[in-house]
Length: 462
Ligand code: 4AD
Ligand code: MG
Image (cartoon, rainbow, N blue to C red):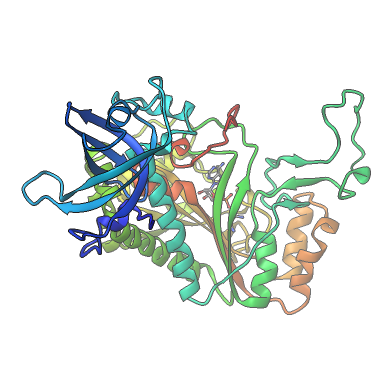
């Protein structure tokens, strides 16, 4: 018997309404009401936010059993879809038979009671069965698809960069080490990485950028979209130890080109999600943040301002605000500064460009002032940095000089340096923190709530 997802029943002009052919729907029981002769089940299969009202009558041979079925149970229902123009819901599903695939018990945590988001994090294995989290994860899926669609249609090639790498691309020393040594063996005191699996010290990647640059200087326009790992010990609402990063990298492109790309990409994703996740967004708008939809709609009309780091510092220095962290030229912008700029001054996302070279990674292209680099961060109200990128230093002599200044070992970067030796070219790229984007798309302020199984400090249960 054909199993039909509930989402297909809710499509306009669906093929199933008021037909005599029976179909099967499957899902998990959200709630149940029952009298002696008739019962109603709210059935949800996660294919869309809407549940299906299943109606069953005492002619069902297992009526007794079904009328006592627990919330959370998984069932399969054979029946027909009947329109109910006078009722609250569009239609209901009249069951001719119901079979229980998996019963549930009365301690099922997702009963009617509303739980806190904190509690939900402790039941990450079940929380996707709620409207809130299923909406978020459907939006996550849709936004991923939008990224691929936008880039593929613009002739980007999707490349896969390694997860295990010998380079800490950002040089921030926040990489997790990877080893095949038996670390549980207490006798193992000293590591000789030359005896380890790869014959050298390797890490989980903090960014696929360096490899993406190799591919961009061959395929012109590429992107990698993959898990990224950082052992930052910052227990904030915006940091995860494992997160997804989209990294487009483009040959023949300068800083302006990637600012333009980032703007178009963000708008495209927002538009896509508004179109394809309408019901989920409406639900989040109604339940959590009544300004969500307006904010997303507004993005489509917004021109994102571009200011230099120096201008940003001037604005911050002139403000009356008492910042916790000192503002001075040469110091990195803290989240409070980024939020002040986007929330109080510009009231929209902005790009900040041309940061001091000393607070940015070695690969960024030096500007003519010799103090700043062609970097760009895209900052969002409520979130802070969502995108970090730059034009890359394509001039071998300047790159070597920078590597030396930073006490990096040029031998570690021999292949990266060869890109500058053989057919070097101006190129640029950025990294978009996918979960930060999702925080914006859903208006959830904690990164732990937009990832199915978040990994953060002291947290890798599921
Ligand atoms: O600014 P970042 O460190 O840039 C890079 O890694 C570059 N190599 C990217 C590139 O040019 N190809 O990181 C990029 C983005 C940040 O703007 C932020 O949105 C996100 O990645 N990000 C994190 N997201 C969640 N948890 C963390 N711990 C994150 N660290 C960075
Ligand atoms: Mg950054």
